[in-house]
Image 1 (cartoon, rainbow, N blue to C red):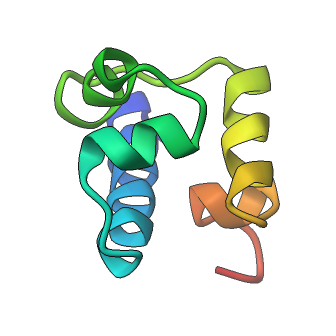
Image 2 (cartoon, rainbow, N blue to C red):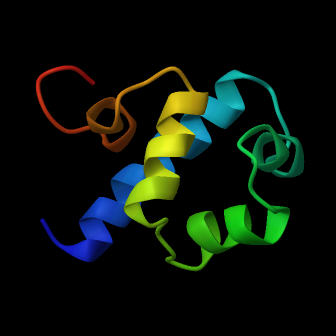
Length: 75
């Protein structure tokens, strides 16, 4: 999988969860303990969190990292 494909999956999943919860990007970023700038970097500028940050985001959302990235058997 390319970096671009992984990023696209990550953003689709993250933004889908945010929209389902009816939260603004700022509120969602603060819920995830991220600065609004960092969240914006992830979703609009092609950035990706490091492994630890991705694990923390997944945990905050009650998901496994595989679920958060949309890989593996369960999505």
